[in-house]
Amino acid sequence: MLSAALGLGACAVSGPPLPAMKTKPEPAPKPAPDTAAIRLIPAGFGALNGWAGDDHRAALGALARSCARISRQPASRPVGPEALFGRMADWAPACAALPAAAGRGAARRYFEANFRVFRLEGADGPRGLITGYYEPELRGSWRRGGKYQYPLYKKPGDLVSVDLGRFSGEWKGRHIAGRVRGSRLEPYDERRRINDGSLAGRGLELLWLDDPVDAFFLHIQGSGRVRMTDGALARVGFAGRNGHGYTAIGRVLVREGELPADGVSMQSIRRWLAANPSRARGVMDANRSYIFFRLIDGEGPIGAQGVALTPGRSLAVDRGKLPLGAPVWLETRDPLERSRPIRRLMITQDTGGAIRGAVRGDFFWGAGARAEAAAGEMQEPGTFHILLPRTLAIPGS
Image 1 (cartoon, rainbow, N blue to C red):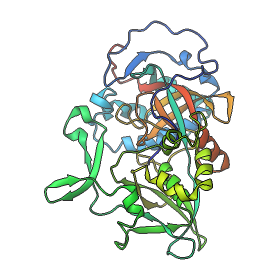
Image 2: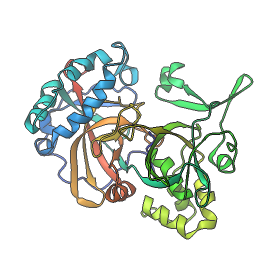
Image 3: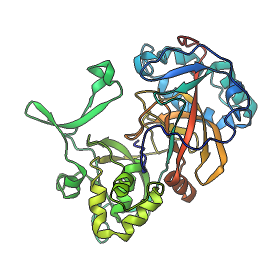
Image 4: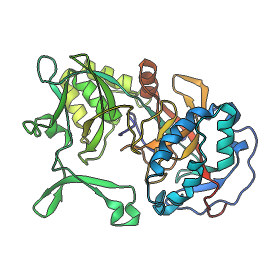
């Protein structure tokens, strides 16, 4: 699943202070050593502002999906960069202790009994950028015709993805993609060439959409639902990317003086594209990254961990810094009601091309009009506390 910032940046920011971030000072613990620009500072559940008021049952359900994946992994498999978060065997006891069903109080007690709290700091400190994404609904056809002229492509057979972490630890979590020509790996076609028809005639068309801008934003979200002309509802999800770097077109529009730096959102970008149809294609092509899709049966959308995402509880993170399947206490604010704080337990179940840094997250809002509005507007400062199994030994803790 791809999740990406539409606005000006994907790095940690210093923003206006979050409302009531702490209820009492933390003790002065001994910090863990820096590893891959991450600091884990022991805290406690008392440091989590709003902890007692959260409904932990929703996070428990999301964690159960992640644990189903964890239980199928080799026990010796490292978790996180340089095994900073242990190995799968360290997470197994917490997963095994998951209750089959739990009330609100029991769900909270489960987390308190099986996890310890660490404040998370990255290279830029404890504060980072929180953006949002959602599952859009589009209109499509199984066949090309009429207004349905914009294909979603399946992953090409000659697209090769390379995990650079297998070659060097300093590249852990990084991937490149391309095609092999002779004995060389070369870049795959960029968005402009694909839109010009470089993949046409190869039988890769999954379905056809009625709007090029909707298709573009589906690439940004990475998954969605398509209402077909025959009445079917097709769910599509991420299958691969062409390997070119992601460019936020909000940056392009700001650089060209088309949008103010403080006025970039999905909604403002859509308005500009609609008002400038002759230039829209060129601006969208500035994002050379291109996503390939597959049909998804059953629940969805599916995140990078391979599990169905939970609206309001699934978080996309930089998997080069944080593990997938970990509980993270997020403190940020609602982008549509900035006086309203968001303080809740999330599960790291997804990643994205624009998600870079230890304190950097993409909040999954789900589907519907409010989800779309919130995802499009969200560019908020936030902090993370990560919950790690009590069976895991963390240096300095």
